Image 1 (cartoon, helix red, strand yellow):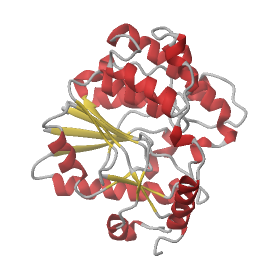
Image 2: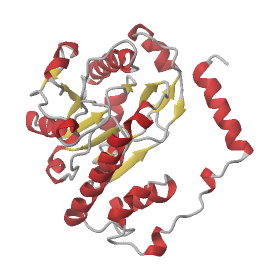
Image 3: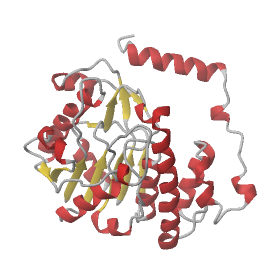
Image 4: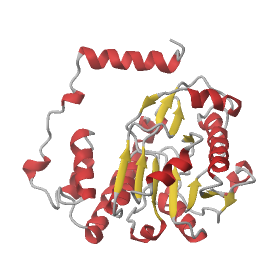
Length: 312
């Protein structure tokens, strides 16, 4: 089995969380590849803008540079050169003959057994979404990776690791969603599940991790980028509807989008979901998970204590 794993590095200053996270990601990818080498052929690939080339590790295969960004598609209050997801995946698809492609955010680090575990899971499935675990934000260097691996961390509900058949990728409908803000995980997940013969979501696995949980991509300063992505997620979902079936409970991608609409309150999806669902199905529901109560408030306090004081 051959697996190609692509990431999108970006040169940042020391004030960015990526300043610490990216070197950790690179090193954990290298180590996981070395451990898997006897059994799994892993190709590490990088796609970035020309100004980011010098931070790419020498042992990563550098693919053709990105040329356009979300800034070419609209006017934004705070200019950020965020790549379009399909531009990254297009280059990965064209550059390799791997059986499977993996895309992860560049701040998602790997456990040493990651590729071996993925290869094992792919014996029964051909599409995976793997949720990360969140560890303390106290770490500052790749030298501390053994300690990071030793920390169990906490589960996280976001989608940031996608595994899918390379030959399924030409069917993907991602529109012009950009990475680095909300919505990207929704359209990526919908495509993976729509084009998998057998799909598995892993929410509890200890396979990937993220240092801290600042959720910078949810900042109000990125609201216009979020609106862009919400529009493009709807466009991608509509295209997916044409090629893979209706956006309702009869299809895996429809069930997923309905789940996000109701459980995660992603009401921006109404635009695409109303094509195949009645008003009663799309009526907002009371969600006990989001009703404030003492137990949930205590849980939030404990998580904050954990993130800032992991030894407690």
